[in-house]
Length: 361
Ligand SMILES: O=c1[nH]cnc2c1ncn2[C@H]1C[C@H](O)[C@@H](CO)O1
Ligand SMILES: [Zn+2]
Image (tube, rainbow, N blue to C red):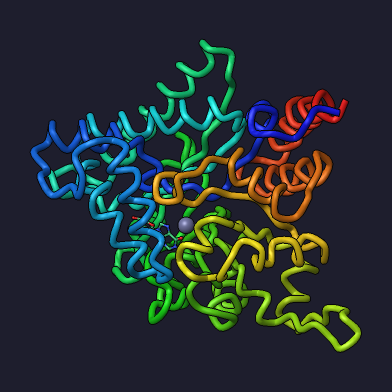
């Protein structure tokens, strides 16, 4: 059995379903792109200082304030060159960390300030991912990236973005999502978009149960028909611990578990936005023990100063997980991906299981 440390974790084949493109830039890249495009509102002028600023500003205990930090990353992702570079580096960074399959999301409507069209924005990002996948392959690091197009839940372009996702479905876009401030913007505001996706036999996930509780999760599932829950961590509001210490599930929690609805849990991000108070109190472990379909995710690597390997390490240190636990969460994620079933199976059988077998020894 290989010792479970960061370097071994980096060698494990990992699957990432919830990662924001505009939340994963390298600090140096933010600085360089800002210089190139004349953006002069960055809060720091060296890479270490900027990295520290993002982490501390995101550590706000509120989703709304956490989201304010994205103004600086989105500002430098307005040109073809900027979008391509950020996507390329994202693929390379994930591959270097041992991620073998990732679904990366971003909101095209936030990248139109310099006159690009929605289609051009998506094209540039896809070009960047392709270039990053090829560069990683040359280094012997194979990664496949599927793109999720996000609509901002406070805005009114979700139907348009869903149509954009379908237009690019055979060119690397594998699904749709809504994100942004959850309170006051329930998923049912965007029913039209979700109906369009369902009518097209296409997949989507919804950020729900992060800054708002059970009503948001209920709407996402019962009214919108979501395939997965972005975070969904507040499902624990529907789980009570009886006097005998045995957890009792309410109707909604039972439904989520029965239907094997995947939870895209993002431990560090959940602590930063105040969805949970500490990692020790994160319900990841409770949900995993109750056999919900839990997955481990980064959400925003820049804001949380994290990686897939680091998120896993934090869970190992907090809850004492071993390789077989991590393999189970990884297979959970691969089963829940939006690519076709046969391709998921192939990655499980040919990449994930053999990769973990080496580590388990
Ligand atoms: O955790 C999140 N919850 C809600 N919205 C989020 C989260 N992380 C990032 N976003 C927003 C900010 C980004 O600009 C947008 C698209 O990636 O999605
Ligand atoms: Zn997110």
